[in-house]
Amino acid sequence: MKKFLSIAAVIALSISAVNAKNFTIDPAHSSVGFEVEHMLISKVNGEFNTFNGVLDIDPSTKKINKFEGEINIGSVDTKNSKRDAHLKTSDFFDASKFQKATFKMTQQKGDKIYGDLTIRGIKKPVVWEVDIKGPGTNPMTKKQLMALEISGKINRKDFQVGTETPNAIVSDEVKVKIQIEASE
Image 1 (tube, one colour):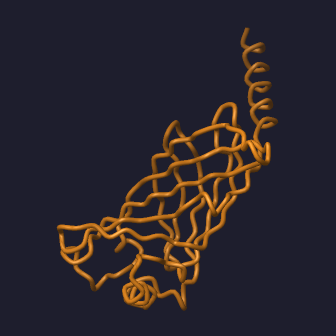
Image 2 (spheres, rainbow, N blue to C red; image 1 turned 90 degrees about the vertical axis):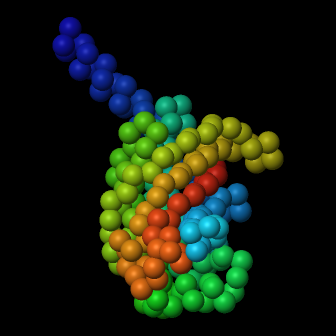
Image 3 (cartoon, helix red, strand yellow; image 1 turned 135 degrees about the vertical axis):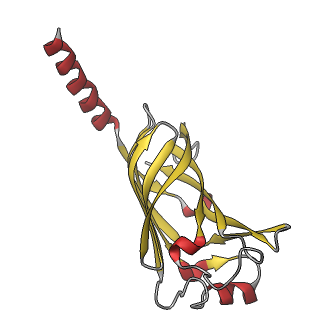
């Protein structure tokens, strides 16, 4: 019986690997956003307009085998050009020195993904919620689609972002909101 269960487990893992597919992230239908509190009473939302990534997922089991992403720090957009220019300075992201931020998933457990986030050259482990949607089919291209909704929180000061700016002006806690649509 043990031998049978071992063989069955190997076959199940093999089938899962066979069903895994590389999906191409569609930046026109995806976003990498964030939200901070301002002055302890309101919220400011922003996005990074330039990003790319790799997604390898099994559509039948919704198991993510690989998820990595990279954003261009200089593409930060809070709908205020003066604020965006300030965010790019050494006071916050230091975009001239640290042009990219990266995320590399290390594992998925249910509705959580674990990985390493690197901002300003500082790598920290993070755990984020993930809601996986799909598979679906794009009626125009006939390609299979998958979608990920990722959310979590980080402390900006853990990454040396805005260390001189008090929490009362801009919250230390940053909510991360990522929407990914990808096709095979």
